Each structure stands twice: as C-alpha cells, then as structure tokens.
Image 1 (cartoon, rainbow, N blue to C red):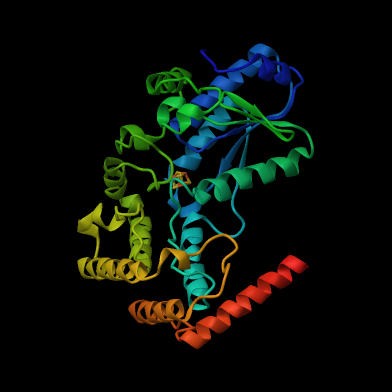
Image 2: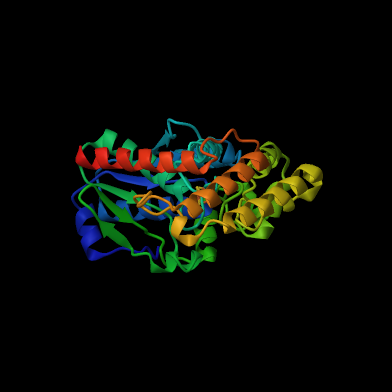
Length: 348
Ligand code: SF4
C-alpha cells in the first residue's frame, strides 16, 4: 500500500494515540480508512481506533450511512455518528436566509446576505463536519492528541493540490494518508477489500459523492443527482430556497435550471426577475457605504442616507419584508444607535 506518511507522523503513531478516521460514505474516505488500518497494523499501533461520520441530514444520499456501517463492520471498528445539534445542513441554509431577512429588516447589514455556502466560505464543511467531529473527539479523548484522518487527495482540485501529508497541532494531528493516490488506486483498494463503493458512483454515474447537491458539484453530477427519485424532496426544498431568497445555489448557476422538468417555471422566472431587480437596486449603494468589518465605521451623509432609504423601501416591497428604517432620519438614528452599541461593547 503506497500510503502517504512522514517519519514524524510514524514516530507519533508509535506512541499509540487514538486514531479517528472521518468517513462520509464516499470512496476517498473509504479507501483512506482501509489504508490507515493497514498501516497502523504494520506499525503495531495499539491505541484506540474509530470511524467518525458526521451526518449532514437530508442532504445526504440514502446509502452514505449504510456504506459507513459496512466499512466499520469490515474493519471491526466502532462507527461514531455525530450531528450538528442546531439542525442539519438544509436547516442551516434555510436559517441563514431567515437571519439575513431579520438582519436586513432591522438594518444590521447593508445588503442581503446569500443563504448558501460558497467555495470561499464553506461553513457547510467547517460548521457541520470539522467542528462537530473535533468537539466529539475532544469529549471522548480529553486532552490527548488525536490523529484525525481524512481522505483528501491532491489530485482532486487545485486547492487540495496544496494539502500537506500531515499537520500537527497540540490537540490534533491531521493526516491525509491517500494524499497522492489516483482515482483508480482508490477504486482498486475498495474493490480488493471486497467492499462495495457507494452506489452513486457506478449506478447513478456521479463523479463525486458527498452531499447530493454540493456547492462545488459540476453540472453533470447535479443532473445525475436530480434525476434520482430519492433526491426529489431535497431538490424541491433547495429550489424553494432559491425562489424565496433569489440566490442561485452556485451563484449564477441555479439548481432550478438543472432539472427544469421538476420545477414550477412561473415561480422560478419570477424569482430570477426579483434577483435581477435586487442586483440593480444594490448597484445604487456606493462602495463606501458597503458593509465592512466593524461596520458602521462612520455616520452616513444625508445623500447616502437617502440612497439607502430608497433602496430599502424598494427592496422591502420587492421581497414583501416589513423592513424598518426606510427614511433618512430613521437611518441616521439607527447608525447612531449601532455606533454607540459598538462603543459600549469596546469599552466593556
Ligand atoms: S459536500 Fe459540498 S455542500 Fe456538502 S458540506 Fe461538503 S462542500 Fe458543503
């Protein structure tokens, strides 16, 4: 097995730390688990080993959890299943839109915030996988350093090409044992083990298996996911959020366009026209008025307050919000209130 490791990592493994392997049901984590256990056995590692699956809820394929269970049974390991307490990923995206409406209505933000995660703001991964898994491992292993294994491969993307084999922090050693494997090597390892890869690869023809619809899926994967009957409830719920929010799932690429046979065209067309109107309205807000860290950093001029009042009035009508602060005076008062709140916080 051509495993990616380092002398410093192998030295750490000789101390028998707990090893936790993150498994999603996808092929890379399956292969990483097989490779890791093989390597640990060769080293004579005697520490605890577990598989950890963060269940993202309705966005998951039906087969993902069973595939993780089969892997755990094959390796004779415990499968620890963890979930975000405050709701699953779909709840998080919907909740973010509700919070965006509230923050816009009370003038805690200048523009509406998109509900979806993006490749540069992957709160879906950080909040629903990384944090949840790390919290569970800390709870279980206390202050011990845990080796946290993931199936990241450098060939997957330009961003992942920069991944190291391992990085060391006081609490975690993050190890990527199949960093240099090709896709063929991954499938070969799974086939050799006698396990089945997730059916979404060979039966549904998906190139990646993660969330059914991922913020980074290519169009053919999204189309392949959308035609599966098991995806339809999720597809409708996600399209409804696009319609309500006017934000396309992948920015300019709307999930609604991926399987047009499944959607209500009138509702989608109306949402896209509201999206264009929103963008036009936001163009009236000057760069100097936009949200920055520590906002508001100054009071607005009367002209700026008038612009914002006009934009907020039209936006409120466009979306049917009951937004406050629709006049120059009210906007000035709100900025003054926010500024003094900020000063109080800084003084505390
Ligand atoms: S699979 Fe995609 S959408 Fe799902 S958590 Fe990962 S990055 Fe986010």
